Image (cartoon, helix red, strand yellow):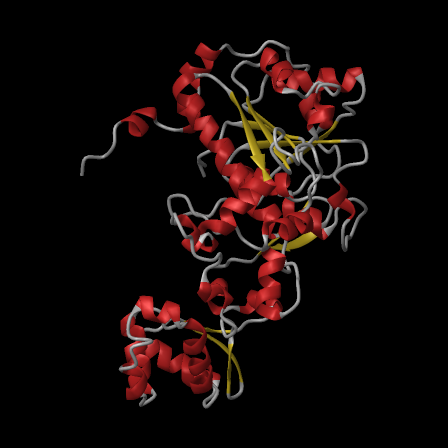
Length: 408
């Protein structure tokens, strides 16, 4: 199938989670992702269970739809090979600390001199010009710094990280979008650019979408945080025989629910009749909801929710997702034959283009594509900006559609 990023070549020097997740997304959308690795390989090759050395489950989760080339960029020969690839690439992405870039020949001026139209993406912990510039950052560190651990302490009594690499994956989405946006800009101008994607600043912006709350207003700002997120009963509710996700939200939802429970007192209670009033009294409201739901089994409440058109769902264990009826009906989990790892079961991609899910490509073994990619002995000189401008739109998008909005 024709995918939106088909024809683009991206050199990916990133490791661990943040960068590899970004490049995996772009690979799933059609880009040719060349994963540049050290002779030791990405550390996630050795994280968690594996069938063969260097092909761990963690690596498989972050690195499908890619090719792998091993280059030792600490050597002159390795840098020369990399620069030859830069001449043919549309984008380069890395998570090398700024202090090491020039020594390794990876700084933007060096690569821009080789390929003036390159999109150069630096994935980092913090912007370089701030107090934390140049410091290392990992998911746990960022979760602690941006307030996630504080929010869990406010709601549970104990500071905890979320049990997922939320900062790595969220910032991976930011990076994939930012690189694609830069490539769209280049389609119009023929000129490349540098893109900085810092974890700390990106995640502060992400978290504060709702938690900046009353702080938007000046003077006399209200306290931080969205009250509904901190309500002690904002959790799966205990029904008579298990847990259920149950979320009346709009006025009509709540009125239907109160009538179902024969709670005319609640239907008329001024604390809960409007969205504003419910937000101001959310902790009390969720406590009352819990008392009602505890009286009957999960199946009863799921039937009620279906009948009254109230959002609800059964609480699932992570191991049960593969048997979820919706995911099963769309064939979300897929088994395919990996060239070295044998049969692999993988979650699907989710996004569809023209109604079709992009295909899942295999994860590369370390240096698997060295001969295929490096043997071409590609020239240093790349296309000029004007040549890029002339040829690139057909590879990424129809610029006439971008420039002429639909009047209908």
